[in-house]
Length: 297
Image 1 (cartoon, rainbow, N blue to C red):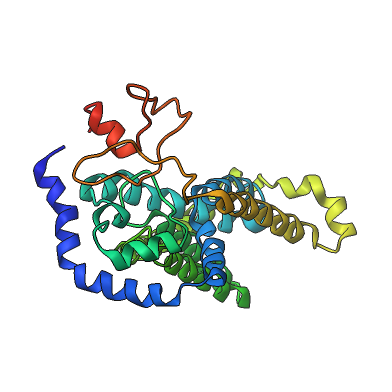
Image 2: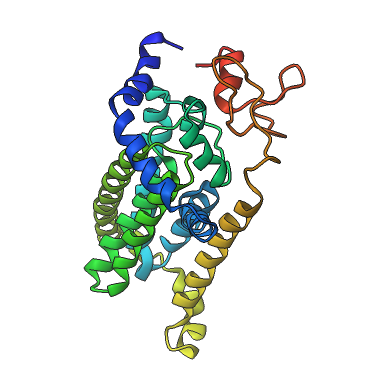
């Protein structure tokens, strides 16, 4: 890795050091078992175990005329946000997680352990969970707001909760989540705008005839049009539980950490039973150090 690129993450650490610690003190003073549960609840909305199935759901929604704009908005928002955060920003900035860089800070370390000692396996800036939550929330907010539905305001609240949870759990710097929020909002807006153009193209071509809802016409009539909303709600709840339930067993002393020991003992999550990141000399490493040890940029 280039020394020049490495300084980008170091620069963020130095520039935002006082701000990040100030915010950590606020969240650290709030810690209790109830709020830790709430933080894990909200953080699940940004986890890839939630976002990826939501993309699948979005694709399904694209085949129904009434939900097409929602499906395309979600799909384009997530694709844009993921590309910017995971493909461009994280590899460019190379910012290490706070639980690796702040191990000598007694206050931070006590808060990190107190929040459950969760960990991730990649770089810190920007926050992928925050990006995921805001790209979904923004695209849905704009869709529902256009349809004048009050539920639109629920999505930004969830996104803000996800954003705060990442700081409360001490797995991201406050400046990380701000970056994720900005990217997520932009991705959500772009996803909504692109979806509008795509839907208009559908309306002007033979593609507009694609409408799977016709297959469920009888069921829809029997339920007075309530079938689709019920199915969507059940699907989202199921996806959320799939993301949320595993959080109860994450982190703590039982977590398998990266085997790297150098200028710090890496507390990142080790990749275990992962064909893309096999053990090196019998030891498991996180994505970052596995790539470093294998000379992968």
